[in-house]
Length: 112
Image (cartoon, rainbow, N blue to C red):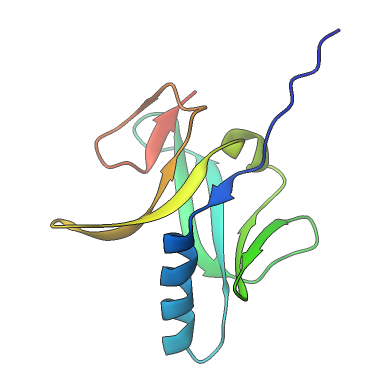
């Protein structure tokens, strides 16, 4: 039997910096929750929101900021990179997921 080593997702310094800006403007600092749910035009979709960490979350932390991933979503996000992108069409958190075999144009839906 062979075992596949899966790496946890990584968060870029740019994503942590943007989260720090968001939390600095808020009344209460929150973690950035990145989750995978069924749905979307390709089968799965990302849910990204501000939330509190729970006991079963993986917590990725830098400079006092936290990004959390629940245990159900973790296998779908193995070795993914969570980043923040600013483009002419808008700014948003983005996920570069090597596990996604295809994704839709909106960037929030994917299939495996």
